[in-house]
Length: 350
Ligand SMILES: [Zn+2]
Image (cartoon, rainbow, N blue to C red; front, side, top):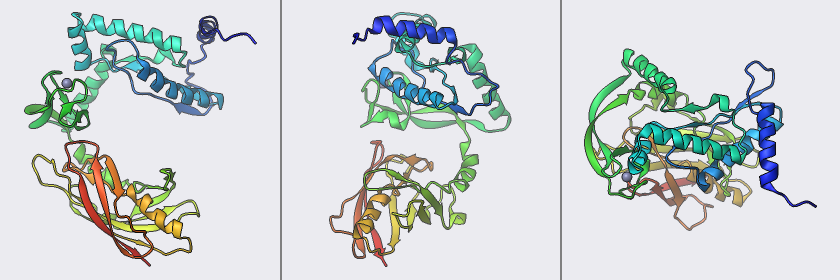
């Protein structure tokens, strides 16, 4: 067998794909459609192995769908309009425009050499006026409708990057990018009044009760709030839910969760408890035990803005759930801004 020679085979095939327009997406076709989009990279340098792996997953998904007969829209672009790009240019003693477009070209060549199936006619570059004019346009639409406002408010500030960080970008009090200590700073900022739509969003959350089996696989089924009329954004309260799995191997679970909205100004504290959970005893003791695992993921925490705080919940009681009793759990938020919560839950086995 002839040895695989990537330098011979890959450029030849890539050229053939390009000449055939294999990845160009027709707009009027009867084929079913699929949109595959990966996160756009920052053009702060050439690609690294993290990019190579990330964009390979997307490419596999896109090619798989294409081979199944879908018309696949698989575009690429650059998140090129921000302080990371500007800081990288400053570091390399270059003008941001020159530095950014040079890197975009370098990355585009690397993407091509990887053989990714992008429709390059659809590429977007966030720092192109042709692109950001639409951001400006939609901002004005929000402004006209009273959906943006300016307020003073404390933010996470990295003095070294000279930029604001999202809570998720602060790891143990330090910047995720440069490891500098993050400070709190009062800044005038623009806010979108997304809270105007919060209730609507909540009303549509019928299926947000998810369940998992003990190997961590998500179970499909229907989850709903039984008393959602009392579920209001910003309110603390106890809300009953029911989860009906589609698979006969699992039984219906009903329970209640109490969400406590914290009033602390710094919202460092995360208050959360769970209410009672009632399960029906089955002939299968393993099934009963698996309720606990399923419900790990039903322990959710919210900060005072009503935004869900991501983290991991674990049951810490060792005793088996064969009889009714109180079971301890711990909720560890991913962000160090929030305290770990320990609490217990009453489980009634009927
Ligand atoms: Zn930083």
